[in-house]
Image 1: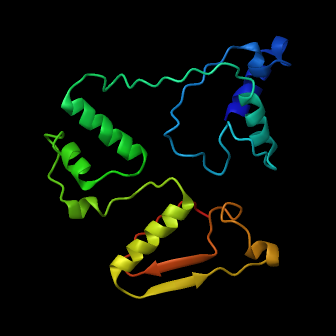
Image 2: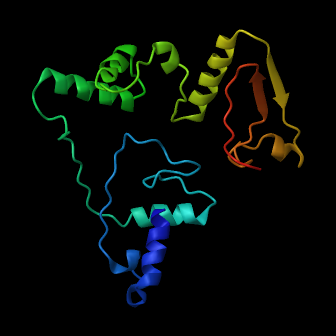
Length: 191
């Protein structure tokens, strides 16, 4: 996205088309606790890819010379036990280490919300930051169903290279699909 912004600004301001970001000053604001980019490297990555747009992205990011790290959380800056506890809950959420007690504390903040039991809460959709975590989570969920699991292996056309290709190359299709009665599935693309 950063490379596209650079390209669009150069096209919009033709008198500065040979300058990064069309000669404009750019301020980036972000949070390093966010999830990693999908099917791409972080803008501060040193790994060049075969995709020229990703490489242009890294080159554009290297044009930033000054970095200021804001390390004071202003929204929870009051010195009360509630604020300290809430800040700790948020940090655990960022690290994927939240606990049932965190959920209970957050649940009491919604006065008009219907009562939700832990059973209902445990059946929600989860967002995980790494593919390996997703695979492990899904296998654990299948085991909890306590029923037979069907494994469907993909048929690869295109020789050995297709067989060892990553799912990112195959539009997210995995080399095997595990299904069981009662398993939740999510269709991400209409092929």
